[in-house]
Amino acid sequence: MESVVPSVFLLMVNGQVESAQFPEYDDLYCKYCFVYGQDWAPTAVSWTLGPPLIGLEEGISQITSKSQDTRQLLTWNFPIDVTFKSTNPSGWPQIVLSVYGPDLFGNDVVRGYGVVHIPFSPGRHKRTIPMFVPESTSKVQKFTSWFMGRRPEYTDPKVVAQGEGREDIGMSVRKVASLSGPSQKG
Image (cartoon, rainbow, N blue to C red; front, side, top):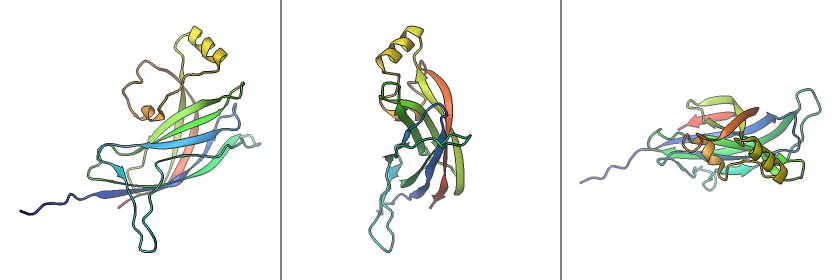
């Protein structure tokens, strides 16, 4: 009896987190991570000239200051390069962005979370991602979190890519981040 080897397809993602607009904040940095289904896995790509390469599933950028023009743009140009393999499209990868910066007391606090699916079609794409922050649900909690310097944030940012577990959390949409680059299926 002959065993059948399941076929796989590859999804190559390369691009960058370009910039964001948070006019009221300065000196921000960005983190990214991927969320994907159980049939998906990051994989090494074997090139003929050199060893196989595995892209990073998560990363953290440098701290950037906003531009001095009217746009007040925070520019990271933070590179992303990863390849996934899968046997089926269910659980298509999503990228989760988290933006952090100092508060009045110098503590790093979250300034925004955002998530977007990796584009389904090959080619050059640019995505604008709405960013949101969790909010306390009562005025007492809001004051206490501000006073203690501990604002609400997720212990695992990947939760923003999932529907369950976010029903009772207050949120406010704040700003947007831009993500661009080619996406290729193999």
